[in-house]
Length: 257
Image 1 (cartoon, rainbow, N blue to C red):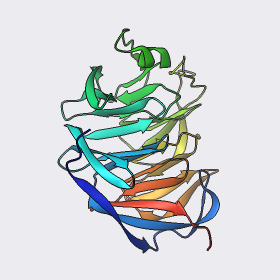
Image 2: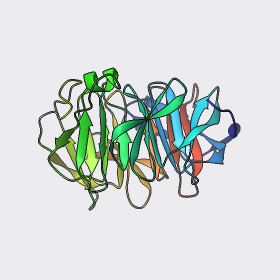
Image 3: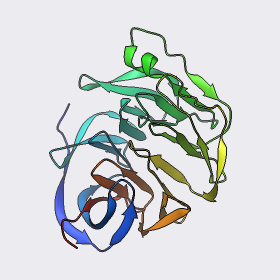
């Protein structure tokens, strides 16, 4: 891992989020801290945070510092499946032993949030996933990607279900997903609402952003969260986002309101 460029945290609490209901964080008062530096995309999972900037440079959060690592990616994801990314040529890479190693296949967006399964969509909005055994045994085994019927532009998985949005921002869920049946039930169900991107946290809670940058959490029905972001992702203890100016935000639980 090359420590080349870092983006240090500076404490500037912004009133973007107040007392909001977030399933991951519970009914708590939240504080928002803006971090120095810029990212165009960010992802949180399994206690890690990763992202890429507008130069397609990849970063990993280490000791509260976003540290640049070798490699060029347009999308970077972290979760139980590992650290995976795709570059501008839609090649897939997995971060192993301090280096990105090219993974078989082509995807424009990849997700590592499922139960050790890999999921994503290609340049034609075709949907693919890879079961746990194939992911964990690679490169000593083949990579039998499973093609799931449907078309989505963005796809994200949790422990029991995967969610996606299509080119019209319609929202879909596929249930009964497991680490050995990544395609789940095989059938997508439409969920009311419109979102341009969607993320499933490792505890199964779902968050999304619409085309106006408004934030939502899936409860019954969707609940809007204060703030404007283009990417939003939650880990077990905090949520992270980037806005249209590529500013980075971390949303934490406050001990006192």
